Image 1 (spheres, rainbow, N blue to C red):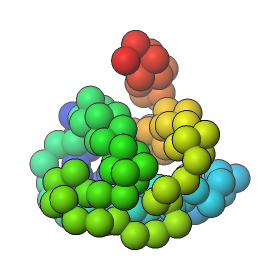
Image 2 (image 1 turned 180 degrees about the vertical axis):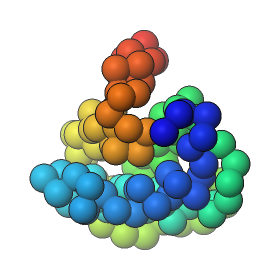
Image 3 (image 1 turned 90 degrees about the vertical axis):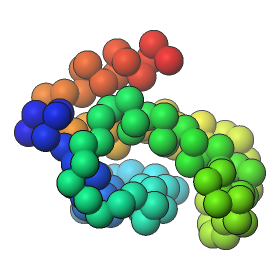
Image 4 (image 1 turned 30 degrees about the horizontal axis):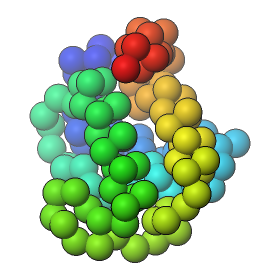
Length: 117
């Protein structure tokens, strides 16, 4: 699939299936992907890699603080208030999550972008 063809609906579906798509990932990775999927719209607008990584970092920041940055409402769940090292572990797996969403053929370009951030 070409990057420009990937929609929010597709990303939402892929994120919600990480338990199947990345079976060896940690529980926190699966919980993070599912939490993220819950916040995506179910529409056909494009969801580019830049949005993917910036949204991931934003969601991780919200989870650390326990407050949704968009709504200013408290967030509850197992991922709220973890030690910093746990969020770092999730952040380190973002390229792997991205490969599941965008396809392995695009992984090299995405990792280069992510590491340049």
